[in-house]
Image (tube, one colour):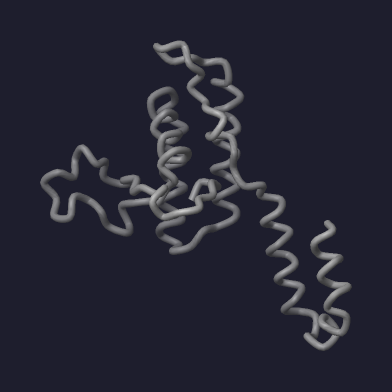
Length: 152
């Protein structure tokens, strides 16, 4: 997970992490295993990751290591997601004006359209509060709580 949303599973693709696809041709299953892959949105995060690989191998390897960490954890980790975001922001700052051989910017607008992490952290915080505050107090005025949460 690199912080991109999708509407349909048809938008997703498999990115080889530990063993690159080009080296998986003779491996049973062609390397399509849980611990060797990340499911990414093809038109944004997958293409972007390969663009980063082309222009800044160190940043690509750093992101790949973090995706491997998430794989090993078996879940999306907010701290790992923040670290990936920081690397993406550093790449964007360094290469914002870089153009490819066709004269197009290498960083497409779709590449910078990621989820807002502060919202997800806030949402997780709210969910934790819901588990701490007794349900009877929390839902004594459900309409008022609903309005308070969504007015933020």
